[in-house]
Image (cartoon, rainbow, N blue to C red; front, side, top):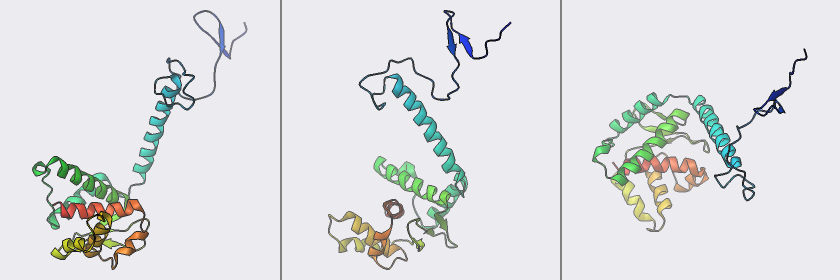
Length: 200
């Protein structure tokens, strides 16, 4: 008796080769001739692409999580200790929808920075941010009246410059133009901290 090692038979009795190539399971949806790049969202090519992308994103999420130096619970405790010490209002039930959105964005950014190891609390519960694109740690202090007055030194149409002036006044950064060397994502993290202070 001869064994058939490389063939399977379908319902019609016809033999078909067993594929050894691993890949996404083909969709039963038709392939669209007008969809060369998998962007129509309805053909089998798109179905395969969406499944592949979901797997890729999940793999990247797990890789990022494995690189965290602080777990999320500990980072959240650090954030709340910082907020309590700096008298930042965390009672989100008292916020308007816009205020809540702003708070959630800032809280999430800060907690993620703590998890990444880019941000820590010092002995006085101040946030110390060492931006990946910078060299000098930035220490955030409570805003004073002069911090708000710093915004008056720039035109009303220069919102980002105004934030830089406030960041300079609330930190150990000597001049606002020192912040221009930071990557946009690091500067946005600084802005989130200022937003949290000014919105409390």
